Image 1 (cartoon, one colour):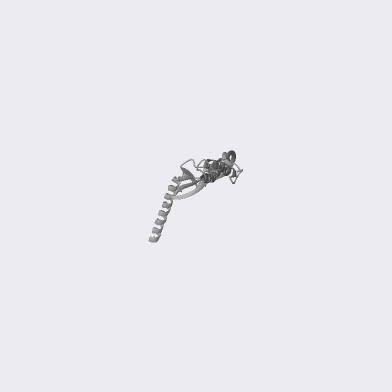
Image 2 (spheres, rainbow, N blue to C red):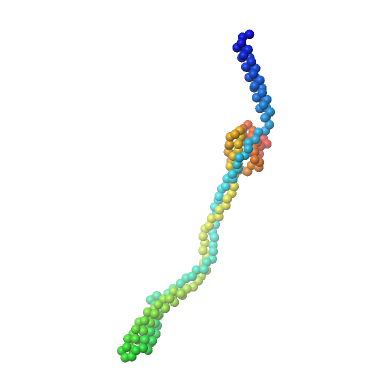
Length: 181
């Protein structure tokens, strides 16, 4: 017999035996295979709903001014100031004091009427409305990362996985209802 034929036959026999050994090893792992779930993150969607919010508020208004030039206050002040000024001095000094009293009283009366007009207010209750937005967060799904055969893969699911691993068939994860098929 030829030496190369013997060597070739031995190599072929070893190859067949090795194939049988690997096949029997793989068939011993023929049970279900699983992938480990690495992380589960919720996918959150925020919705904003506008609505109108109204409140009753107290509002202070200034009454309309009847005498915007403050003539009444000036006149009354001048009369009172003139009478008071007339009480002082004698002779021509009395006239000067009366005139000074009238001028000073007129200025003071004008100022007093202005302050009174500023303080002449009334209040009403008014409804004030504004639009406010209500935010609502809702989980619409889950980003799931799982490891299979040393590789990390991702999937988007409607429901959160109930276990920390997933059944694999033909290299594909069997989520939820697919797990029994």
